[in-house]
Length: 76
Ligand SMILES: [Zn+2]
Image 1 (tube, helix red, strand yellow):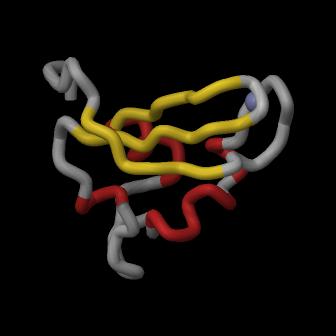
Image 2 (cartoon, protein in one colour):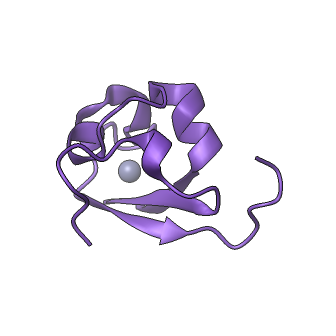
């Protein structure tokens, strides 16, 4: 899924998050985690360039990222 170019973290639904894939595996950030790390106005089409979201293990930017529904969306 490719979000519109103006799509931001704030446009994610409460039960949506972003899954980033790197050499170590896949890490999923929930909406409120993204808000805390990069802010609600961060545009999703460049969000993979934000170092706050890079893998702490391989220290590389994510290979790709996609919007996912997070199973437990209760603790917003
Ligand atoms: Zn990694």
